[in-house]
Amino acid sequence: MTAPDLDIGFRVLRLDSSNMQDVYYNPTEVVQSLLDLTTDNIKPDRTPEDLLFQVMLDLGVELSSAIKETVIDGKKVFDVADGFLLACFDTGVTTETVTAIAKKKPYYAIFRDSSMANDSVATNFDQIFETYSPQTTRKVL
Image 1 (cartoon, rainbow, N blue to C red):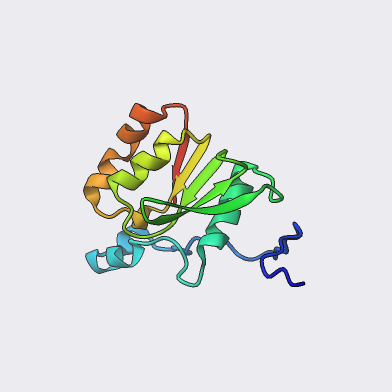
Image 2: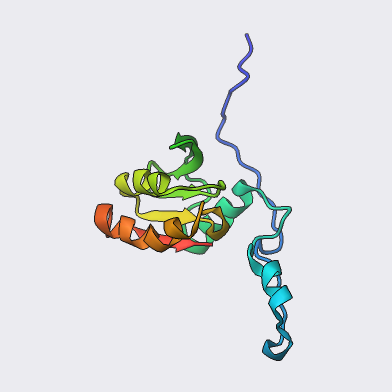
């Protein structure tokens, strides 16, 4: 008898540096070409799981909390502690994705800034949550 999807509830984590890129520029040294390098503030070798665990630590969410991966509007969403925290770090996040997550009314909703499909989604992000889940604490990495 084999159980390929056996989950015995054991999680191994290791300490690492921050997932955020180090940016050390003197304001007088900033030129237009440097701004292109700061469009994504996440280190390129980091996974969505890395981001999730950093967010959990930042927010004080227990690392032993149940984590499920679900798909909402075609995007992978981490559901931590039965909807307490919902996090989406996929690219191309649309207004429909944000709306579907807001309608689930999580306590925390976390997104990656560079994940937004376009400026319209980023602009309307807060308004969508104010409409469907004003009590949700929102964070954009």
